[in-house]
Amino acid sequence: MTLSCQSSTNSKDYSGYHKKALAYCKENAMNGGYYFLLDLSIHSGKNRFFIYDFKQKKVIEQNIVTHGACDHFETNVTKYQKARFSSRQDSHCSMKGKFKIGKRDYSTWGINVKYWLHGLEEQNKSAVDRVVVLHSWTRVADKEIFPRYSPLSWGCPAVSNAFMRKLDTRLQAAEKPVLLWVIE
Image 1 (cartoon, rainbow, N blue to C red):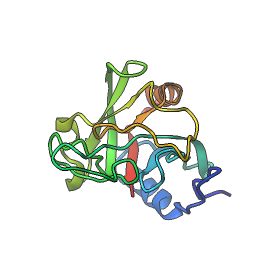
Image 2 (cartoon, rainbow, N blue to C red):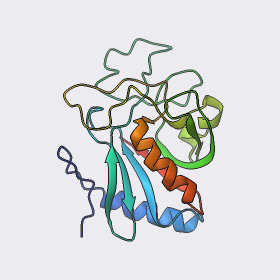
Image 3 (spheres, helix red, strand yellow):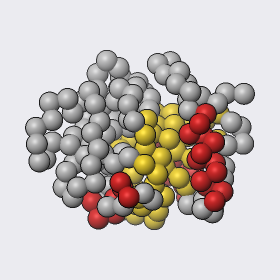
Image 4 (cartoon, one colour):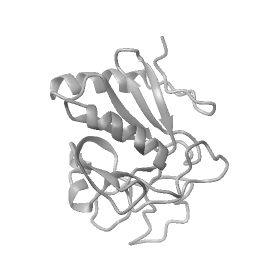
């Protein structure tokens, strides 16, 4: 039984997150089949977006995801190497914590689909106001590119077009809201 998120380059044990995520989903009437875990402490050229299946107790999909440049109000010389977090409007930073994946909507990026992210914690309550959404972007690779970095976003978790098609299919079929949890 695999409890960690593993790829060719990541062997971290996330079993504590998986347990907490399942409990949170049960307590808040969210999807109990799976959730999305994004570990932005991992190099952006490596897989760090994980779909964890609660029933199978394993990661069933993984891919690359962008993080925010966080360079609008101050210089950020390490923006490619390390994600920084802020809820400040127009900061272009990533936001961490738990989010409920909301309404499917039109996007001008990638496959033209986005999902609104609703922050569930004080540190990410401004997600809707900042338009921090889950979307695809043609510049995001569909496989690990380490040691190269993924492009930077303005705070949105952006994935490849191919991965977004998989996410979109899964999210459209979900009967309850899906949890997306960003950690570092």
